[in-house]
Length: 145
Image (cartoon, rainbow, N blue to C red; front, side, top):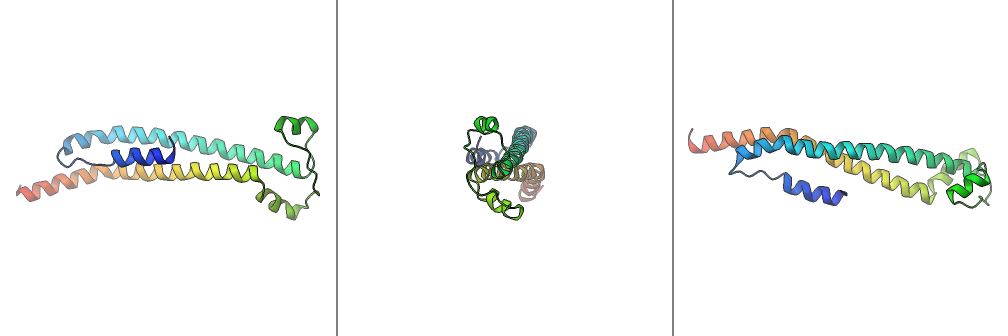
């Protein structure tokens, strides 16, 4: 699922049917399980993507320094770097402007946004029982019980 799909799913799942609070209270563990599974999956994806980013960054560092062999360049599908070998203090500028690294960084940030969204959902699910209990107490108060 992408972020939009998760947002749509949560928009449906977060609703509490005020007329059937008893059913709503027993759905909390199901919601917890559902979104916890998503959270774990996306945390693992984020970790993997960060590792891939670090590997690519190291390869790009070696690429700009002209340290990759012809076989490595062929495997990566890259042409030999024809520019001037950057100095150590210039390397961050080269890496920061690299299109492949920026594309992967955007993917990492996207996954981190999903993780943050799912963590927020988990916090809402933790508070769900309290919200249901307050609603029940309010109904009791209104009815004079």
